[in-house]
Amino acid sequence: MNKEQKHKNVSITNRKARHEYHIGETFDAGLVLSGTEIKSIRAGQASITESYCKVQDGEIWIHGMHIAPFEQGNRWNVDPLRPRKLLLRRSEINRISRQLAEKGLTLIPLKVFFNRGYAKINVGLARGKKLWDKRESIAERDSERERQRHEPERY
Image 1 (cartoon, rainbow, N blue to C red):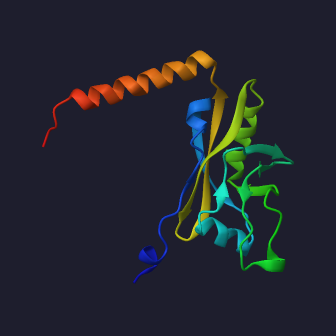
Image 2 (tube, one colour):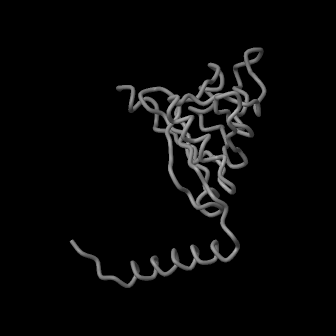
């Protein structure tokens, strides 16, 4: 049994993000985590639904990301809601901070995944949707589903 089969590919998604926001440019960033936090993420015990990112002192931090305490972690467990640092290149941080200065844009996490054993997070520059935008995207999705249902299958 190789490593890929041993650890199933765990990914934690922010399902509300695409419904609540128009997603612009996305970035993949590393996460600075403790050992027990990695074990909890591998077990799928994390949530990024209510989280957001901030630029502080030239670094990007994620706030509100909940990682459940690891059961066997006892004294090495840390606060489940503590801010965590994101690892990005300096040029990406500068570009993000310039765009966040623009009114109405925010940086939200979209997905946590593993790449070669390292935890990564996909963050996107987002602009909030209005209520009619949300209804419009739901209608588009439903019409696409209907079109797929009535279209004959092709081999």
